Length: 233
Ligand code: CTP
Ligand code: MG
Image 1 (tube, protein in one colour):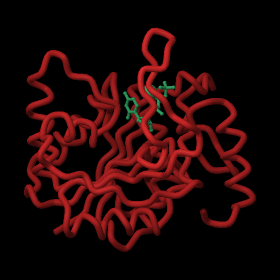
Image 2 (cartoon, protein in one colour):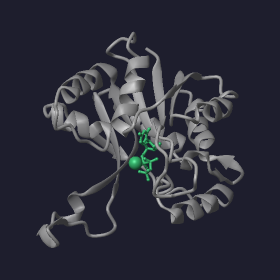
Image 3 (tube, helix red, strand yellow):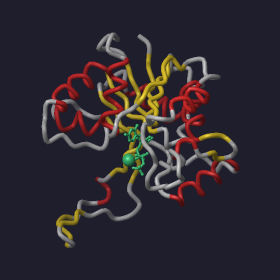
Image 4 (cartoon, helix red, strand yellow):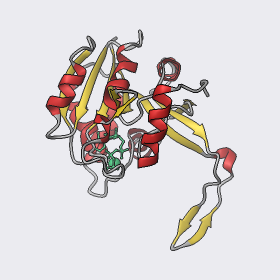
């Protein structure tokens, strides 16, 4: 069964504040979006890539995607990441429930074949797979300016992408989510966790290089990584 990668580039990069979507910024001379698409296009386990782009920038995304043989669609996203995922699910509406689909933040240009491979392998046995890295800072829950809870650091994980799913599970979770007027979520595993709590979410290791370009400082780091790759970690 074909494995599809969805590269989510529907945001505008407000926090980076570059005056254009951050996925169009060049690092090492190539647009961030291109690097993210290339990682999946190059991977032997991926048959097809769908790019979800911010409204008003579809032509730029189509030009970036054009050289990649596995890209089958460049579509417009929505106002939220959730809405952009829904747009991708619509494009995949005719695919069988068993289809494996990976959702990746375009803002993570340094995802590598090893991380993608771990997600694909885990999808053989699990319907929902996340990529996590140990937290190096102590992370606490804060409410009203005071510490409310201090979960042990060893039990905490920072999520990266790609997140992998059997398409049927994600469809079902989104069906429930979209019927919920109180819907809120930052990622697709979050939707599965909230609306299909009985579905186990397997967590595999990501990589420190797989950072998300979120703030202006991350653009500096990304430029460095693009030109002087560090050892894999
Ligand atoms: N994303 C998306 N559609 C949206 C919002 C976000 O596809 N409506 C994508 C982004 O393009 C990004 C990923 O989801 O690749 C992670 O989101 P984030 O880092 O928050 O990117 P932006 O929303 O673009 O940035 P900001 O929140 O600073 O505006
Ligand atoms: Mg955002």
